[in-house]
Length: 245
Ligand code: NDP
Image 1 (spheres, helix red, strand yellow):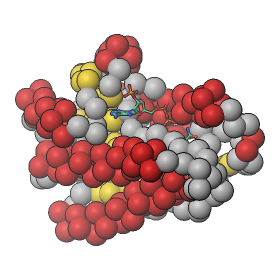
Image 2 (tube, rainbow, N blue to C red):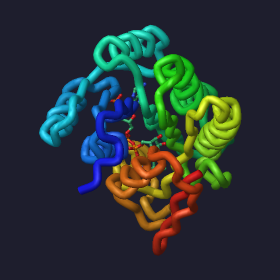
Image 3 (tube, protein in one colour):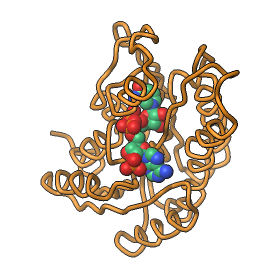
């Protein structure tokens, strides 16, 4: 099996479940050492054990990415243990469902706090570790909903549209340094994120007329986006869609 990221160091936020957890495995299978960050340490430790069983180094770090001091501590640990970083995967994110008229200001701020501000904060803190590493990449997880505003998802769509714009700006800002900045925009994906919607909000899962893809499919696309020289791609699967840029 090809291991295109052998000896690379990859930091994945939100690696305790869903797409991030699948990414931990996919990057380890690709030969990368993985640093796994989220708030639920036990789950991260499970994911780290699984990665180690694939023959790579793995570090689980409890980190709330909405807290500056947690993010600083995370980066200090990456520097101490690995000396640098080759790929940052900004995956931690949350949904927000409901008509724009009905959501609260606090809910809207919360989703922007995680999906936008934390992504910016983690990226900014990681850049000193990414600089000077050949083939360095930032991979931002957006959503197909970041490319269109859909009803009942306006707050979430707006947050992911902000991720798209930041990704484009950063790509241009870092081009001269050879740091690749990629966007992975999954369609509806099987994960806990989806469960939240079903359980907490009671929205029917077919409210969005897309067939769910698996977290593993999305994770494979992330790994592809992390390897130098890939052309920008739009990937369309039967009944569902994912955008890579
Ligand atoms: P999950 O809810 O399964 O995973 C979300 C992850 O984010 C968890 O690991 C969670 O870990 C972490 N997280 C949440 N808050 C924080 C925080 N404050 N600090 C650190 N980590 C945090 O959802 P998905 O796997 O589906 O979502 C991953 C990404 O994919 C998100 O950006 C989402 O918007 C995007 N996406 C999802 C789609 C889907 O249909 N599922 C479709 C398109 C995009 P913990 O709770 O342990 O902190």
